[in-house]
Image (cartoon, rainbow, N blue to C red):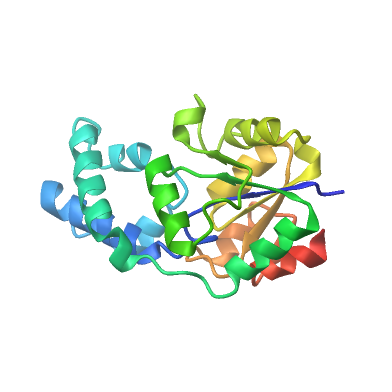
Length: 209
């Protein structure tokens, strides 16, 4: 029985894809003169920001992160979009009595900003960000922490995300896993990580539980 749903944030319940891609491109071009391809940026979706940027220059990680965040915060409200049907589906899940959590590699201040735009500030019972754990996605610790705060066992939980980092985080914690088909990562690649479920829309979770 599934008693809790753990959601990734970016690309799963809010469309921040353009914002993230443009933030990476701006940062890499400005500081390293790299014109990065979108397809390469997308493969790192779900990974903590500092980890991804350190791949490009581990001696400039702090400067890269700061540049990314400045651009991201400045352009946030203009570039983020809601995903059709997500809000209504999550409210239905809330009404069903299942516990709801967010497990994200995003900072809390930006998560709250996104939830305000979606008008969902009081919907989730727990929000886990990188500040809450020592290890991060794809390790299981963030999902385990969320389960602990929700008062549920991992095996009673479904981790829903749009990247292989989400699938691995859920699996490493002992949760059931689910990937959304509207991910920018290819489904061929995502299926290699063997999620328990693939859904076209968040509303499909109601059928699973």
